[in-house]
Image 1 (cartoon, rainbow, N blue to C red):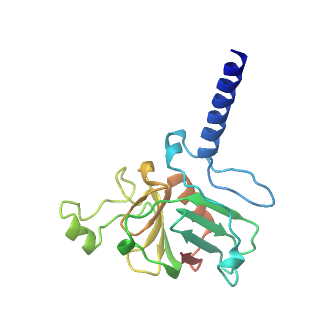
Image 2 (cartoon, rainbow, N blue to C red):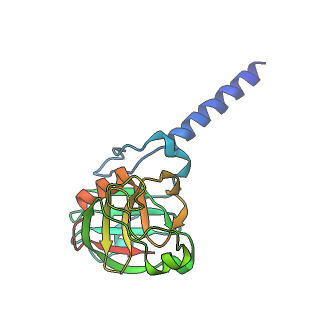
Image 3 (cartoon, one colour):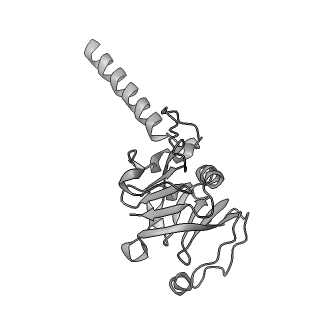
Amino acid sequence: MANDLISRRALLGGAAGFAGLAAMPALAQDGSTEFNVPVSSSVRNNVSSFRMLQWQDYFDNTRGGAILVDITSRALHYWSEDQSIYRLYPTSVPLSEDLTRRGRTEVVQKVVNPSWRPTPAMKLRNPEWPDVVEGGAKDNPLGTRALYLSWTYYRIHGTHDTRKIGRRSSNGCVGLYNEHIEDLFEMARVGTQVLLI
């Protein structure tokens, strides 16, 4: 009986600890491991498994800041120009390899409450989709903020559908929780270098 009690306590304690880890938000590193961006508890099951990376493995410098999107681990890494800020965010990634683009690009525009328009290829696959969803609408696939990349139709943006994060669920873009894109939006600037691997 005593062994059963200990086993149940260990199991419940481990489950509670795991649930706490799964709900962790973006990682802020300024010499610490403080987690400081809230994520709603309703999205716990979609957090990707990922690890911190070093910018030197992917960029020659951090001039203008650097964003690395790892499609495999479904994570976005951000380093500030002076490297005093590091963030690690779970993301959604493209549904399939034919929708995935890899390589170097940069942020060319920042938009608050962006309007969404399906690409011509999306309209062919889904003719019932609307031609536009205005910015600020609850069903807007771009969420509350968007970083437009130099590649036509590619964005790093928020989403109101939190089930998508941590999954292959986009038509090519990289999606973040709205809280996370708002955090990244404040730090990234036009000209921030971006690498998708």
